[in-house]
Length: 397
Image (tube, rainbow, N blue to C red; front, top):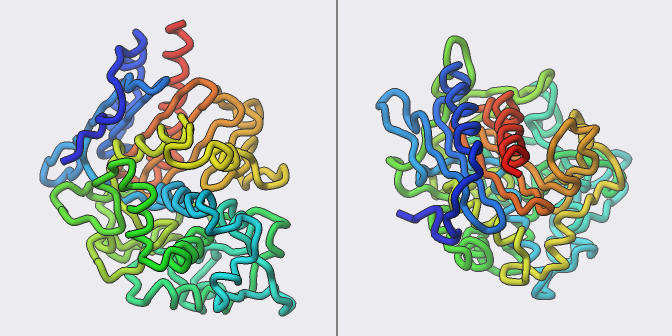
């Protein structure tokens, strides 16, 4: 098993930090909004708080531990984005070149039939005109009719076949003219495979998870005994997420068709946007490597580009004050976001119940993984935990 704190020095926490975080986590468990959680907080390269609480599997009373493996869903996006940017750093991929240079078979068109030019920058920033099947209003939307996989279902076809289906649907807008969360990172995964001439799993290991010793992170989980059971919020308590169960993340949408078993299936295509598993400690290694910069993982100029808003000033839907960089959201206006985070803070999460943020101005990296959707991704817990961290840091001055 991997020690999740191996790459960080331990340091005493500010006086109020452990108690405030523990209170937020315990309240969410007591309210039965969460089943289990892992929280890691690093400041200035030192681990100042680590906690595992609740159950990884409630029915068998298996406790949550620091080395519990989670289905990452969209937490995979910054991992795969970093791999793509490693190719940019090597001069093998150009951010603003037409991806048709490497993927000539992927040629989606605009609604009026005109060909479209898509770049790696647009894939990384979700400005490429693509969408997600789970955003459609019902089971008869264009992505559904084309049989497009969102990367979290039990699909039996290849990544190349999914791109073929995706390219058969007209783009939602001309690339570069709007922002829309999408399957772009799955297309990015295919682009990485083509340029690297290897599997996405191998490419990610070569340039990200291997160098950072993220040994528990990959596209297949090999030890089911270490993987957290997935739960979905319900009354009076979260229910186990059933194989094939569809759960809407947003009102008015058809929702995500989940396959919790997918992460154990080596035949499932590697979904760059949703298909990985890993530990909170592994992911903190990535965040800290990016936060600290210095060229060990990527050139500093590319890390700066990751953290620059790429949307042209557009707000993300229902997320005021945030833009989007290359792989995650970027806070533009803390006042509009009603957030204590510093301008430029990186943030995102994952549908299986995760959130994370990096406040580079404060030297702060926080990873909060849970096994409960969607409370751990976008519920009250996320803001309460954020506020507990900043409240403790402010009071500790």
